[in-house]
Length: 182
Length: 156
Image 1: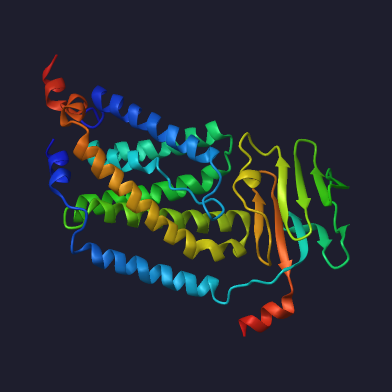
Image 2: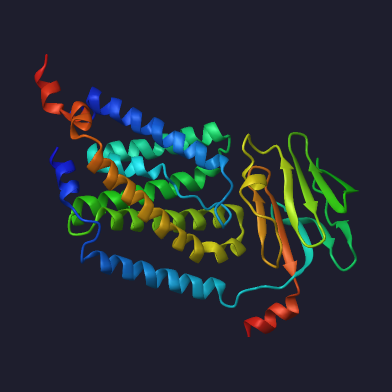
């Protein structure tokens, strides 16, 4: 575990969590885009960044913390049921694709698959919890919306990794140096 | 830092992406076909308000009047008209939901379900058959009901 979660990694995870929560809260204040409940899910930028830079366990921690804290901040704990389920499934898919198939596929593709699955799971769980099968009629549109959200998220992640100077990440991720220091 | 270098070297599109995009496209087309065709564009005939799985209130657009169907215990329903709209307030000891019913729409005007109230802010107004608004914490559901005869004809 110590190998997984060093102090620097926890610090970077904290920064990513804060950014993700900020995105989550701001997006919740905005009206839905075209469809009820449709959001771009910009907080997932930091989830994908965590998968790439920090690791699988850290990404799952980030998703759980983001969903729980986000629901508490927004004041909608019932949304936790579907947002956490969808978040965990989609981050698992991101991890599997990144670990086993990347770089044979692009990051945008990983992001798109993850976003579509997120929207599908969220809609299914929402319909089951609220007993509203009529909401299923939005599922196709929401999956389509997931493609758009996934492309935007993937693009932003690539741009962040390309244009933020490498030394910024290096400060947090120089695990070997930290471990060597007593 | 190898991870970042790997991303920097990568491109926006890889040939294998096509396989994933194809699967997603097929999935979306199937979902759109199953759930959207036939598309229900019937105008509203009735608004039904559910508490849990039971209809507690209906508003009939033909009669232009509402009716309390079933009043669950410790629940109060208040109705009033204001600015050409009919308002239905569902009150329990700790919760309330205010439903606005207009000439061709219905929406959740106010609720104390949470600080943000997704049922008020996230759901657009009910304007046709099958549209819904859900308030999960209070188990309130508003459903638009259209002309069933017409909708069955379309489905056939």
